[in-house]
Length: 83
Image (cartoon, rainbow, N blue to C red; front, side, top):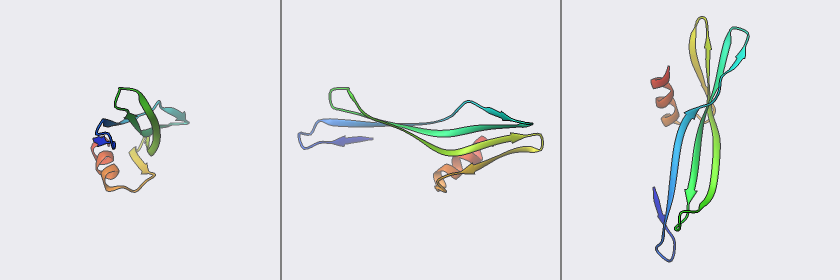
């Protein structure tokens, strides 16, 4: 996504969703799913970085499931594809 300032120089917003490192809890494995957002200024400088947890992916002997933190339909579709 590109944003324009008053001087018409472009800002870029880059977003990426990824899984974090697993943590073991007995027979369960818990992985955070996070969204990283980076706002890049007109001259290529990083203006802002935000990392937001959006879900937990839980694996156990009986199967995998996810807990969404934001309830966003886009997150729900993403989780369906991962399970």
